[in-house]
Length: 557
View 1 (cartoon, rainbow, N blue to C red):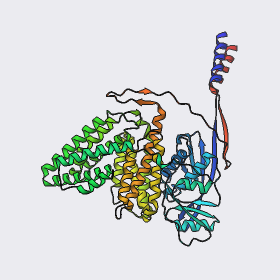
View 2 (view 1 turned 30 degrees about the vertical axis):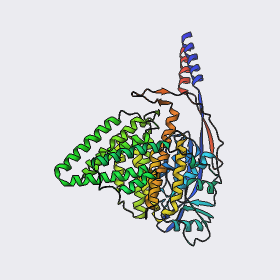
View 3 (view 1 turned 180 degrees about the horizontal axis):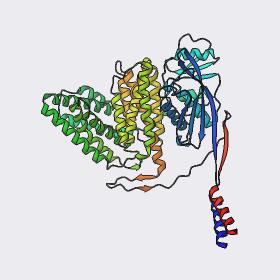
View 4 (view 1 turned 135 degrees about the vertical axis):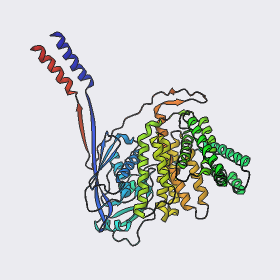
C-alpha cells in the first residue's frame, strides 16, 4: 500500500516538475492584393496569418493554386520578413488564404506585399488600408517587376485605393484617381505601407582586403598557367594589364579563363583522339578535386571558395553527361580547379558551418529558382535562351548529393538572371538600387565575419560591364547576384558564429573547439491590433496524472 502511495506521489512530483506552459501568438491581417483575371484587373483580398512558435513554413489555401509559384514566393516572403525583423524564420508559421476566386495572383506578383504584411505582424504594426502594392520579392529585399501593372492600378483606383506601390520602371502613364509610387526595395514598401523606416548598415563597412588577396592569387595562378601552356593569341593582353592596373584581378582572371576555354575547344576539335583525351582527363581531375574538397572543413572564411569549387566540379560532371559534351570547356574548368581547392584549404579556419543543417534553406532557394524561371516564361513569354535550365539541373543534382551550399549558389544564379531579365525594360533605373542593395547586404554579412569573396567578385564584374557599351543588363545581373549571394551566405555565416564550433589557424588536422555560449535576451511584443490574438496553452502531462490517480485508486481496492 505504502509503495503504491509513494509511486503516486512521485508521479505527481514528476508532473509538477515537467509542467510547462507557453504562449501561442496568432495575428492576422487582410491585404488588398492586385491581380489580373479574365476580365481585367482586380483587387484580390488575401488573409495573412502569422503563428508563433511555428515550423518555418508558409501554407497557402483558397483558389486552387493561386497562380504558379505562389507557395514558394510566400516562403521567400516569410524568410525575408523574419530577417528584417531580426528573428529566425523557423520561429513562425505563415498561413495565406485567398478570399476570392474572381482572379489569380500571377505567381510571385503579390510576394512583396505579403512580405510587408508578415513583417508588420511580426513587429505589431498597422498596414494602411488606402494603400496597395504589387511586385516580386527577391531574397535580398529587392522588389522585382510584374505583369499587368496598368490593369492592376486601374482596378485599385476603382476600389477607392488612394496609393499603389509598383516596381521601378512600371508606373503606368495617365493613371487617374490614384497616386502611383515606384519602389525598388522592401524597406521602401514597409515605409509607405506602415510608416516605419528601417535602418540599414552603411556600405562603407564592407572590407574587401581578403577578397583582394584571394583574387590576386587566383589571377596570378591562372595567368601563369596561360603563359606557360598557351602563351598568346587567346586573350587581349592589353585589356588584362589594364584591368590588373585597376585592381580588377577577378575580372581579368575570368577573361583569361575564357581564353583557356577557347584554346582547349580548338584542341578538342583538332582530332577525335584529343577530344577523348581531354574528356577523360577532365573527369579524372574533377573527381580528384572532389575527393580532396571533401576533406576540407567549411568555415565562414573558405565558404565561398568551397562553394565555387563544388560548382565548378559539378559543371564538369553536367557537361560530361550532356548529349553533346564540350570537352574543351570541361578540361579548362577542371585544369583550373586546383587553385580554388588550394585556397579553400588555406582558408579553412574560423567558425565552422554545418552544411547538412542548411537543407531546408537550400530547398527554399531551389524552389524559388524554379518559380522565377517559370514566371519569366509564362508571364512575359520569355523563353530562357541562356543556360538557366541547365543551372537548375546542376542545383538539383547538388541538392540530391547533400551539397546544400553549392546548390544554393546555383539557385541564386537562376534567381538573379531571371530577375535581371524581368528588369530588362529599365535596367538603368535598377542599376544604382541593385548595387547599393548588394553593398548593404554585404555589410550585414560582414558583421558576422563573412569575407564576401564571391559577392565582391560579382560586384567587380558589374562595375566592369557597367562601363561597357550595352553592358547594363549584364551589370545588373551581377549586382543582383552579389546582393542575393551575400544575403544567403551571410545568413549561413551568422548561424555558424552562433553555433560555437571554431577551427583554429593554422592546423593541418583541424581540431574543433567550442566558444563560450552567448547570452541572448528574449524579447516579447504585444499582439498586433490587426486581428491579433494570444492564446496560452498548458501542457500538464495529463496521462501521468491519470496514472497516479489510478495507482492510488488501485491501492485502496
